[in-house]
Image (cartoon, rainbow, N blue to C red):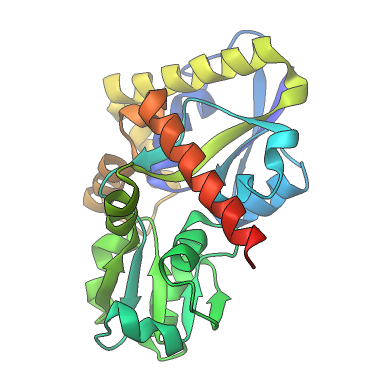
Length: 268
């Protein structure tokens, strides 16, 4: 069976899925047609039910995706100390955000949801591709921006200032790790195939940990603007034991986020 598989070109995803993409790890009976896209594009593809298996922002699942898709226990990005940051061109306090123009990496991203949960009084929130946010804020097009991925390591190079760490806020508010992105599989694939996918993704990650030199060229191929050091920082931040298996703590965090997302929509 050939399945469409979508994930981002970011180092954490190419690290996790690299062995599968390169054929170094195989799931019996399955082949993959890989599609690499930014996370907001993947969110939109999931809403249209385009892909069989896909990385998405956990936040978008609250838009009804659980009807057609099942959340997998492996392959996601969830942890502590790895949440999105709100940064600004000039120093701002969190209270001052209320009247500012803020840009996020997409209305269906977890970063956007966390911004709304943190600052529900915000009225001027726009969206841009994540890699356009820091230049736009630095140029004065927006007062503040919500940054993800490797941007947390490089925002100071743009002269930007951290306003709040949304992951840190989430952890202190809920006591739980922050769920950023998860892997979905169409329920129509059936329980046996879904279980095989979960085990295969975990095996692909384990292979990358055991043989990093074999997947590093694949990671670097899709992260050409990043140094090896930044790639390693990115992987170290977003890939952890939750990526192998969400476990009870991970599932509790995901359910907390989805509950808050649904409540936010009801209260609009």
